[in-house]
Length: 446
Image (cartoon, rainbow, N blue to C red; front, side, top):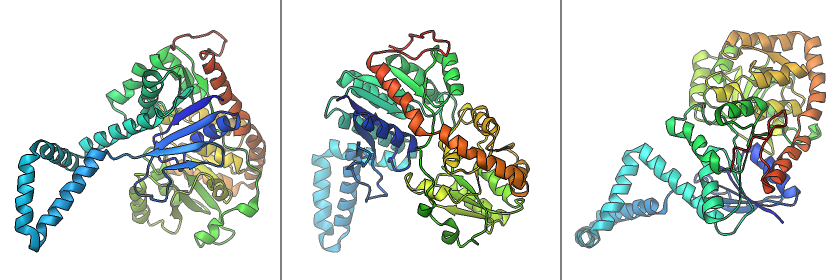
């Protein structure tokens, strides 16, 4: 049995792509271990679990032990010295200890002060520690494949699969690493530095594959973000109307996904006051959430816009079923956004929900090519509102695009797409590299 060690830089609670990949590999007979991160805010999340899909999840701690122990030591010492009955004795003992253990004390205090006072220093120490914890966890056994999900786990996969063991490196780039928000010079160039050591690579769509060829000279495999195929069992639907105290006939205009910058969420809120009908419902969490909540209050649209915390990825389809339409309105803030065809677009279609979407190439190809919604200028709130109102007022249009989602869900689903993943692994085992669309091999990777 072939074995796979997969890495993901999250807690693995809402990563639909990774869930699909692990499930498909386990179903095909691979032994799969997924190494993820612990969530210190969620004590109920197990450190290790065997998933019902047939793969194991191992979560490693993010905080470096030396820092945690140093801070605990400093806190306990302070509390002990502060007690009245032991103030003098404690101060004397602590003073002696500082002399005898000066090197350790200085190191601990330096680490504590540096990490407390300098957030960026603390962040880098924590991230480096988590990366090493992942590598250590992966070296407890030998695997045939080391699968890195995105650039932030590629160093771990290379260390584990090339330095400590001899396995194939599968690099699964979910994003455009060279042009995405929040990435500086080092992150944007790291991919190019590490790719010569990778055995095979996957990206999300052909626009990104072509971009990859321009940068690096080879055309990677394409693995689309298509969801699990699910029959529409409305008896399992989560009743959003009851949850939000909405009338049963209220149209739910749904956004689901991360509440992050560049996703068009500010424009959605501004557009909401011009919707002829319906309530905008946002399901998800992220750094932008306080900003969106403040914008809702400032614009006075609290009665038109509702927010719900993120839900487990397995449960999300049963919330999506409530929607009259769904939004995919990314902003063109970087090539990563412009070239995207993310999960939510296909999750809407799997639930037979028409979409209001931006007109970026991969998204337009699906929406216009299958006539399953309307395209809008995602930077313009009025354009978004006009798109929504078309689907509300033109019932013939809505009926047509709604009917077309039934065909689309049969086309864009994981039951078909997972064969592409298994093909990547079969070729990686034989060291067959990605090829051009015209069939010409591009043997650039090692």
